[in-house]
Amino acid sequence: MSTPRTASRSRKTAETSIELSIDIDGSGVSKIDTGVPFFDHMLTLFSKHGLFDLNVKTVGDIEVDSHHTIEDTGIVIGDCIREALGTKEGIRRYGCCYLPMDETLARVVVDLSNRPHLEFRAPAGTASAPNMPFTLVEEFCRAVSSNLRANIHVELLYGRDGHHIAEAIFKGLARALRDACEKDPRVKGIPSTKEAL
Image 1: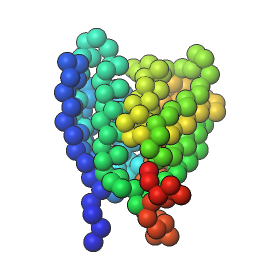
Image 2: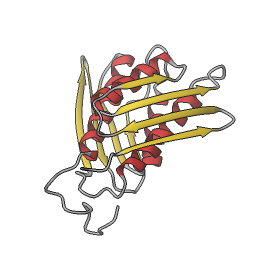
Image 3: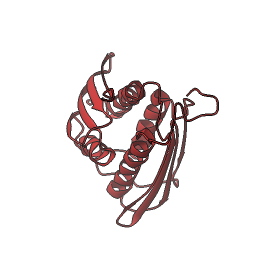
Protein backbone atom coordinates (compact mmCIF):
# COMPACT_ATOMS: atom_id res chain seq x y z
CA MET A 1 0.00 0.00 0.00
CA SER A 2 1.43 3.37 -0.98
CA THR A 3 2.06 6.13 1.54
CA PRO A 4 -0.65 8.82 1.50
CA ARG A 5 0.57 12.00 -0.17
CA THR A 6 -1.05 14.52 2.12
CA ALA A 7 0.00 17.59 4.07
CA SER A 8 -1.55 20.17 6.33
CA ARG A 9 -0.34 23.46 7.68
CA SER A 10 -1.30 26.36 9.92
CA ARG A 11 0.21 29.75 9.17
CA LYS A 12 -0.45 32.91 11.15
CA THR A 13 0.91 36.38 10.49
CA ALA A 14 -0.23 39.89 11.35
CA GLU A 15 -2.08 39.88 8.01
CA THR A 16 -3.55 36.39 7.63
CA SER A 17 -4.46 33.23 9.51
CA ILE A 18 -4.57 30.08 7.38
CA GLU A 19 -5.55 26.46 8.04
CA LEU A 20 -5.02 24.27 5.00
CA SER A 21 -4.83 20.59 4.12
CA ILE A 22 -4.36 18.80 0.80
CA ASP A 23 -4.38 15.27 -0.57
CA ILE A 24 -2.73 15.32 -3.99
CA ASP A 25 -4.11 11.86 -4.79
CA GLY A 26 -7.68 12.89 -4.06
CA SER A 27 -10.81 13.16 -6.17
CA GLY A 28 -11.27 16.93 -6.32
CA VAL A 29 -13.34 17.43 -3.18
CA SER A 30 -12.92 20.83 -1.55
CA LYS A 31 -14.08 23.05 1.25
CA ILE A 32 -12.91 26.61 0.66
CA ASP A 33 -13.48 29.77 2.70
CA THR A 34 -11.07 32.67 2.16
CA GLY A 35 -13.45 35.60 2.55
CA VAL A 36 -12.91 36.45 -1.14
CA PRO A 37 -15.76 34.80 -3.10
CA PHE A 38 -14.11 34.89 -6.52
CA PHE A 39 -10.89 33.40 -5.11
CA ASP A 40 -13.00 30.69 -3.42
CA HIS A 41 -14.42 29.92 -6.87
CA MET A 42 -10.90 29.71 -8.37
CA LEU A 43 -9.63 27.38 -5.60
CA THR A 44 -12.69 25.16 -5.98
CA LEU A 45 -11.85 24.84 -9.69
CA PHE A 46 -8.18 24.26 -8.85
CA SER A 47 -9.16 21.38 -6.55
CA LYS A 48 -11.68 19.87 -8.98
CA HIS A 49 -9.47 19.89 -12.05
CA GLY A 50 -6.26 18.94 -10.23
CA LEU A 51 -8.05 16.09 -8.42
CA PHE A 52 -6.67 17.53 -5.19
CA ASP A 53 -8.76 17.19 -2.03
CA LEU A 54 -8.33 20.68 -0.59
CA ASN A 55 -9.55 22.31 2.60
CA VAL A 56 -8.79 25.99 3.09
CA LYS A 57 -9.82 28.41 5.80
CA THR A 58 -8.19 31.82 5.44
CA VAL A 59 -8.96 34.89 7.53
CA GLY A 60 -7.18 37.90 6.09
CA ASP A 61 -7.15 41.68 6.18
CA ILE A 62 -9.62 41.98 3.32
CA GLU A 63 -10.71 45.35 4.69
CA VAL A 64 -7.37 46.54 3.24
CA ASP A 65 -7.66 44.47 0.05
CA SER A 66 -7.43 40.81 -0.97
CA HIS A 67 -3.70 40.79 -1.80
CA HIS A 68 -2.41 39.23 1.43
CA THR A 69 -5.22 36.66 1.52
CA ILE A 70 -4.52 35.44 -2.02
CA GLU A 71 -0.72 35.54 -1.83
CA ASP A 72 -0.48 33.88 1.59
CA THR A 73 -2.92 31.14 0.62
CA GLY A 74 -0.72 30.46 -2.42
CA ILE A 75 2.31 30.23 -0.11
CA VAL A 76 0.65 27.54 2.00
CA ILE A 77 -0.65 25.61 -1.01
CA GLY A 78 2.88 25.52 -2.42
CA ASP A 79 4.34 24.43 0.92
CA CYS A 80 1.78 21.67 1.32
CA ILE A 81 2.13 20.25 -2.19
CA ARG A 82 5.92 20.18 -1.76
CA GLU A 83 5.55 18.33 1.55
CA ALA A 84 2.99 15.90 0.13
CA LEU A 85 5.33 15.02 -2.75
CA GLY A 86 7.96 13.77 -0.31
CA THR A 87 11.11 12.57 -2.08
CA LYS A 88 9.40 12.87 -5.52
CA GLU A 89 10.34 9.30 -6.36
CA GLY A 90 8.36 7.94 -9.29
CA ILE A 91 6.62 11.19 -10.27
CA ARG A 92 6.24 12.41 -13.83
CA ARG A 93 7.84 15.73 -12.79
CA TYR A 94 6.61 17.67 -15.84
CA GLY A 95 3.12 18.81 -16.68
CA CYS A 96 1.61 20.89 -19.47
CA CYS A 97 -1.90 22.10 -20.17
CA TYR A 98 -3.52 24.20 -22.87
CA LEU A 99 -6.77 25.31 -21.27
CA PRO A 100 -9.58 26.85 -23.33
CA MET A 101 -12.33 28.87 -21.67
CA ASP A 102 -14.73 30.20 -24.29
CA GLU A 103 -12.78 32.95 -26.12
CA THR A 104 -9.72 32.51 -23.89
CA LEU A 105 -6.75 30.16 -24.26
CA ALA A 106 -4.02 29.81 -21.62
CA ARG A 107 -0.94 27.60 -21.52
CA VAL A 108 0.59 26.43 -18.24
CA VAL A 109 3.77 24.32 -18.04
CA VAL A 110 5.24 22.96 -14.80
CA ASP A 111 8.56 21.37 -13.81
CA LEU A 112 8.81 20.15 -10.21
CA SER A 113 12.52 20.88 -10.40
CA ASN A 114 13.20 22.23 -6.88
CA ARG A 115 14.26 25.44 -8.65
CA PRO A 116 11.57 28.08 -8.14
CA HIS A 117 10.88 30.32 -11.11
CA LEU A 118 7.70 31.88 -12.43
CA GLU A 119 7.46 33.11 -16.00
CA PHE A 120 4.11 34.86 -16.31
CA ARG A 121 3.26 36.40 -19.66
CA ALA A 122 0.10 38.33 -20.38
CA PRO A 123 -0.50 41.46 -22.46
CA ALA A 124 -0.41 44.80 -20.68
CA GLY A 125 -3.91 45.82 -19.70
CA THR A 126 -5.24 42.26 -19.47
CA ALA A 127 -8.79 42.38 -18.10
CA SER A 128 -9.45 41.60 -14.44
CA ALA A 129 -12.31 39.53 -13.12
CA PRO A 130 -15.02 41.77 -11.63
CA ASN A 131 -13.96 41.05 -8.03
CA MET A 132 -10.27 40.14 -8.30
CA PRO A 133 -7.47 42.18 -9.90
CA PHE A 134 -5.62 40.24 -12.62
CA THR A 135 -2.30 41.12 -10.94
CA LEU A 136 -3.31 38.86 -8.03
CA VAL A 137 -3.54 35.86 -10.36
CA GLU A 138 0.17 36.36 -11.00
CA GLU A 139 0.87 36.84 -7.29
CA PHE A 140 -0.88 33.57 -6.50
CA CYS A 141 1.14 31.72 -9.14
CA ARG A 142 4.38 33.28 -7.86
CA ALA A 143 3.60 32.24 -4.27
CA VAL A 144 2.87 28.66 -5.36
CA SER A 145 6.03 28.50 -7.50
CA SER A 146 8.31 29.90 -4.79
CA ASN A 147 7.05 27.64 -2.03
CA LEU A 148 6.55 24.50 -4.10
CA ARG A 149 10.00 25.24 -5.52
CA ALA A 150 8.69 24.65 -9.02
CA ASN A 151 9.40 26.15 -12.42
CA ILE A 152 6.03 27.40 -13.68
CA HIS A 153 5.38 29.09 -17.02
CA VAL A 154 2.01 30.74 -17.55
CA GLU A 155 1.07 32.43 -20.80
CA LEU A 156 -2.22 33.97 -21.77
CA LEU A 157 -2.33 33.27 -25.50
CA TYR A 158 -5.51 35.28 -25.98
CA GLY A 159 -8.69 36.24 -24.19
CA ARG A 160 -11.01 39.14 -23.44
CA ASP A 161 -13.20 38.33 -20.44
CA GLY A 162 -11.45 38.74 -17.09
CA HIS A 163 -13.38 35.92 -15.43
CA HIS A 164 -12.55 33.51 -18.25
CA ILE A 165 -8.88 34.53 -18.21
CA ALA A 166 -8.44 33.90 -14.48
CA GLU A 167 -10.39 30.65 -14.71
CA ALA A 168 -8.31 29.34 -17.63
CA ILE A 169 -5.09 30.02 -15.70
CA PHE A 170 -6.27 28.41 -12.45
CA LYS A 171 -7.63 25.35 -14.26
CA GLY A 172 -4.52 25.11 -16.43
CA LEU A 173 -2.27 25.29 -13.37
CA ALA A 174 -4.32 22.57 -11.69
CA ARG A 175 -4.11 20.22 -14.68
CA ALA A 176 -0.39 20.80 -15.24
CA LEU A 177 0.34 20.18 -11.55
CA ARG A 178 -1.87 17.10 -11.55
CA ASP A 179 0.17 15.61 -14.42
CA ALA A 180 3.51 16.58 -12.85
CA CYS A 181 2.58 15.12 -9.44
CA GLU A 182 1.22 11.83 -10.75
CA LYS A 183 3.18 8.63 -10.28
CA ASP A 184 4.42 6.90 -13.42
CA PRO A 185 5.07 3.17 -12.93
CA ARG A 186 7.88 3.32 -15.50
CA VAL A 187 9.82 5.95 -13.50
CA LYS A 188 12.28 4.33 -11.12
CA GLY A 189 13.55 6.55 -8.32
CA ILE A 190 14.01 10.29 -8.79
CA PRO A 191 13.26 11.58 -12.32
CA SER A 192 16.56 13.44 -12.68
CA THR A 193 20.07 12.48 -13.79
CA LYS A 194 21.25 14.33 -10.67
CA GLU A 195 19.24 11.76 -8.66
CA ALA A 196 17.85 14.58 -6.54
CA LEU A 197 15.06 17.12 -6.87
